[in-house]
Length: 409
View 1 (cartoon, rainbow, N blue to C red):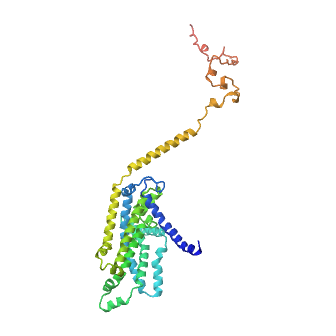
View 2: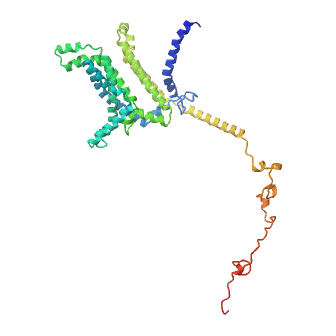
View 3: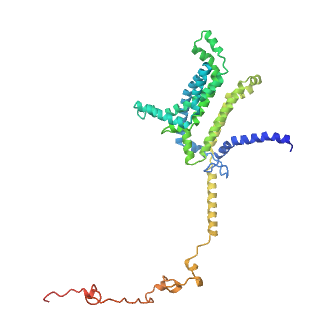
């Protein structure tokens, strides 16, 4: 192998390793979502099953957390996008010195740890609620409200960066021309600037929603007694993994791929080059339309859902369970054969190796039944009795406790 071929293989090997590192965990999670094993694993493979998706759908706490996350995500988008857009417009219209100061202020929340933002949001609104003597049921203590406010502080900065990258390419003379033509500032903004910022608004909306959906560090403090999708997943991981987590990953990956495919088809369909290609090909134009692609993907998703509901792996799982029981029984039998039976005391102390018993008796065991026979037992020597001043023997003996005759008898 010469140096030229080796140098050509190095980039390819690097790309393979990079994409394996990037997509390897995702592929493994997708595979484990369809394995009947109670723990997420690829090997050994047991049965192909879709039961984990049913278990995921039956998890009320996870579904509730997902609903709360969707509500919070929509609230964050509604609040953060206008704030980010206003900050970007302001930075584009002020002087260089003031722009640097304002940019530092606007970007600061991104640099603050999420734990600090969560705790400060919780404490701040608790103090305000205490000042107004608000009840605990008020919005000052609502987990949804606190989470939206806490997430907006840094997600608005993300949105601002997206808008800044777009507004730097805007020609401000277009707005001035609209004003010179008699348009009001509001009309100039709606008719000129807003259409130009539409792609950035769409990107910032998706970014803000996804950042809100996956946020954990801030949410775990501001959500209070409620729960979100990420906090429920965190608790499930903490108390034990099962392949339902992999089922969540499969759903998220599927949604991401569907959105990416539709978006890419739309961009290609709207490009000038593709418009020329499909100009005289009506069938190809219809087939590559984003709506057609979305409809095909929707049919595929419905077919996948139907297969998940109809697939039954109970017979395979019962067979696997029976095999495990048989294997366990065989292991127990092998262990019983290989382990010698414990020796009895009579077998361990026999013959000439038995130590001499100072108490005598058969088999050198003083507690043997034949050594406990009262007829063969040696009589014990009588203890000498000291003379009693009260008569013979023991003063408390029965013969010495006779009742004396009554006087005058």
